Image (cartoon, rainbow, N blue to C red; front, side):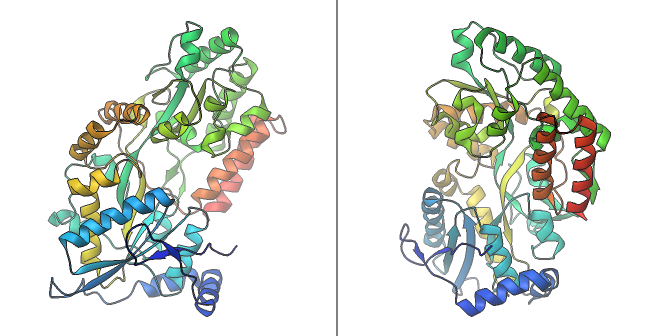
Length: 449
């Protein structure tokens, strides 16, 4: 699949335009990705070790690449313009595009020898890029204070460490959130779910909701890797352990059996409806389509969920011990290791996370601000009730978060999609829990090999 053409802008903020790559360079990059990506990643990373120009006032043009829509582009460009205002010698070559095709494009640029100095990345790919020696280790900058994480939740910045190196810094914080329909529960005089409920208590509560409202009490999350991950951590396991899976087929069988029992008790919808909710599209989440009383999402998705329903929504942690959850990086900023402007790129990351004006400009577009002091400032300025709820639940959970897990390993995206496939086989009765679990484990082993 060919990457989407990016938006590139050196024009005033808000005037993005499409600049297609020269055909020869694009074809060369695509070929490189196909046949020699690991080699080229390593080769590209072996650039000049000079951290930047000796003269701090020398002109610097920093290339930066991120995904997002028009609104994110405007906010980001405003923040970068503010940086240039405070550092007149630094200007930006800004490129952005929609999420779809973004990582194809990033791989093409990097393997083709034309990587951005600074780029946005998520936990699906951070470990892979770090393993290819493409990301600058930010540890020395953190230790010197040039990259200030003193106001970050510890588990948030730690979730950017890969093999002992700080490969990326969180651009914002997020965590798992169980969103429920408060209006429905109030109408039928039913109790709201609470953080700390056990999984069995949650299913029993959902069964009660179904019986009284004729709306299934909870979406079946057996296909949701976020829910499986939290549940595993509550069992003393994890999604990954080193370069291997952190769980067994027996663990997954228990997970699938838990939700088979919930379906048998009508605590969840039927498989066809569950399938609808397995879509990542926020508009198809069952809590807003009215087909279930709860959905399993990221807490910062509350405002987008609220846009799709007239009902009042609430959000709590996933069931079980909330210390199994952690301050997750919604996405990261990473610096290309071979960048000749690495010191400036790191300073830009520090600015976007710790400058009060920049953080207020960016708001919650990339998740809750990583800097806890500035998060309170943004919270005070926020008028969106749904976002206030997200901030409130994360503020509560910050006191309960456990140690962050390791960043997902190569093949994580495939693991997520294979979980959906295996869970739906179990949901539809095409396979037993044990059979579906075995199929899942085998597919995962191939994905991470």
